[in-house]
Image 1 (cartoon, rainbow, N blue to C red):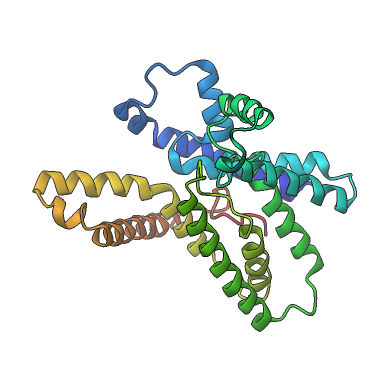
Image 2 (image 1 turned 180 degrees about the horizontal axis):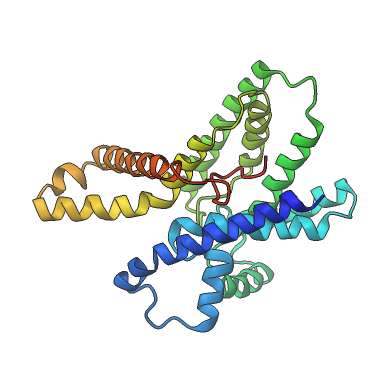
Length: 277
């Protein structure tokens, strides 16, 4: 039954289109679209995202299409492919400086980065997590122990923090989104999420989606307010205050939108990151 998948892709594309239009004026104002070519536009739409935080949506959509293309292969083959793709992404992200001086490596990633700015995209980044989530959801193993999974998540997060600091100290990172320990963290997190028996709440989904979409606007608003009121030291230079203010405003606007939206129909609007029920 492909209906849930089609519904997921339709809602994801709809949200991406709305978000692209929402941030179009900001892109024009910031000069991000000046001198942009046709192929630059394709790169932004398919890989980088039309605004810096929107990379997640095309990454998810492309990752789903990749898994659809691989669906008839044996599970072991699919797993091998998605982890190899993640490995290639690692070499172009946090581990870029390790092999960047080798001719083959330099040629491959030199051409790749003419197509996409990062390997954190739907080709290298998203498929492995979509695959892991799908497999764990289908199996729902009875031995899913919350204490062991909590311990595994805690230890793997510590390992990822150590990995991140180590790579940063070695100064080999081109970007800092992909780590060897990240899939391990997500494995334990997925297993813990499967233990939650609470029925999904559409209101919470709308709020979380709203926060994701609107928070860059709130960053702009806070910075603009601070400059207008000459309170940069409080709201911009103080990173904790800046962060808390943006979070509060993002939540407030998302909550207000949820209240307005719920007075109408929510059935045809994407309401969170896990849209398949």
